[in-house]
Image (cartoon, rainbow, N blue to C red; front, side, top):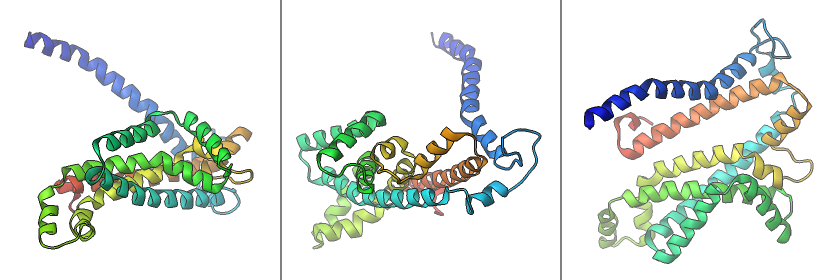
Length: 274
């Protein structure tokens, strides 16, 4: 029986390799094409290829993308920092103070924010914002994005808190430290890599979340996803290739940082030099 299973696995391996190669091609070939076209002289994305950096220079001159980009960065940074603060507080409450019923209900609410499609969440948030008088506004976008990314921080920090040795906290308390001092001096340094990881994920998710911003943005205010959506409805713009290349590069850098933080959080050698 075991040999039969091994033969089946070997027979399927070429198919699995082919599917993996196809999936990677579908995922990365468009990115490679966008990166190549961002250095192409042609404003229509056609060949032959001739190298240039003028589309990158145009981003910082007259493309109209710089303002929405900075607005998205500032808004996403504010959302990420808020998610780190409130998410860590919620994770500590779940780990140390919440009753079993309250903890289960709170986790279910957080899971619903992750599993429900953003299209439905955006529409529901618009109805709620109109009902409470906020309507479409920057503050509404902030609240909507915060509600969207908060579960990521809570679950990441909670996982690290569950893995901590409780004896360390008990030892600090037995030596006279208050609960706040014990957390700040003992637990906080140990969960800091998880907090930073959750913050980076919150920043990336809020920065790229088009649907929430689309439903809640006021008239005349355009974040970067909304600006890109407006531009591609008009036609092809080579500036977008350069901007997309920069975003891909920054995203890869953030992923590398997340990977290093994850290794450090796990105590592995690759995360020693952050």
